[in-house]
Amino acid sequence: MRRINRVALTMLLLVIAFAGMRAQTRYSYLSGRSMSPAFEGWWENADGSFTLFFGYMNSNWSQEFDIPVGPENDIEPGGPDQGQPTHFYPRRNPFLFTIRVPKDFGQKELIWTLTANGKTERAYASLNKDYAIDKQVISTEVGGDLGSLRDALRTNVPPELKVEGNKQRHVAVGATVTLVATARDPDNLPERRLPRPQTATGGRGGRGQGEGETAARGQQARSSLPSPSSSLAARSGPGLRLSWIVYRGNASAVTFTPDQMKTWMDTRPFANSPWSPPYLIPEPPPDNKWTVNVTFQKPGAYDLRAVASDGSLFTYDDVTIEVSQ
Image (cartoon, rainbow, N blue to C red; front, side, top):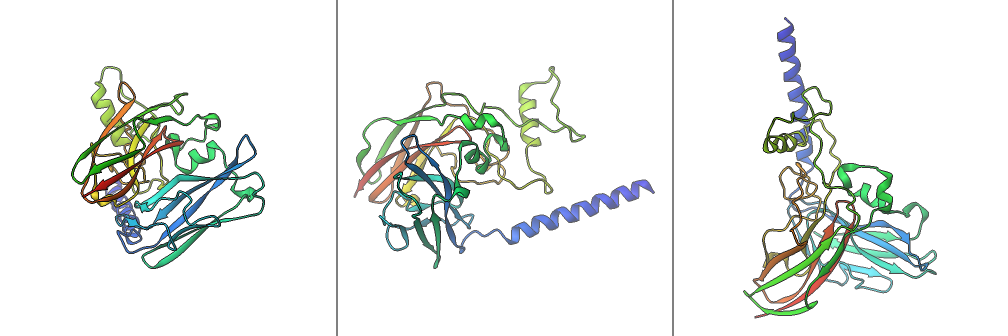
């Protein structure tokens, strides 16, 4: 009788879990949805000026947008161009760019207007005290350090980043450009590590010393996959990483070799994203130099951005490439 009850309970839990998964699926869209600019917050600089942080939320899981600076991609007053992206990747792209305002900014506002799929959304940036942030807040917002709330993250130092060579380059369609970027984590914070595996009873645990490293890593990877009943909050694996993105220009005409780890919050398992379980961040190259080859299928102006992160904070460096026929 007990066995029958256990089977019934198991079946009931499976039905509830799959119902939850179907509910999530109903509200996940590949395309056709709107996109919202985001004011992430502000902090004060040593000279009394202020840095305003911006990102965006593309409600689509697949559709990307190219929105040139102008009425549909405008930051005012002082715009329309204040360094915002013109290519927009799927889903959440946090803390993607900043605008520095003077110490006398006071009660003023900056308004970022974006129009996508026929719907206009706006973000209002001000020095309202509720929007004041620090490094720990940034880490928390991006699920940094596997979702940690450690006080040590308040003094975290962002990665050092430098792209070698000229910042303005010219190339023909079909030719290959080699980009080399050097990145280092000055304080090694947060420390590179894997999530601790869950034991069969739900507690924290690990494998015995006699078992191989490969088996242990496999167990850690499997244990970090979310179950249908687990939290859906995004988490980012700790450790230095670097990826290139198309910041401005037609990304569909750009090919990076090797493939670049995503910088947008793709939380699906094994999605080549720091927010994707099993959160295995590749080790940096031995010389801390990341090399990528880039080819362009169409002429135009392209702004490529190197994004370095330690899993909690971000550093950027850009290259503009003019591609001729």
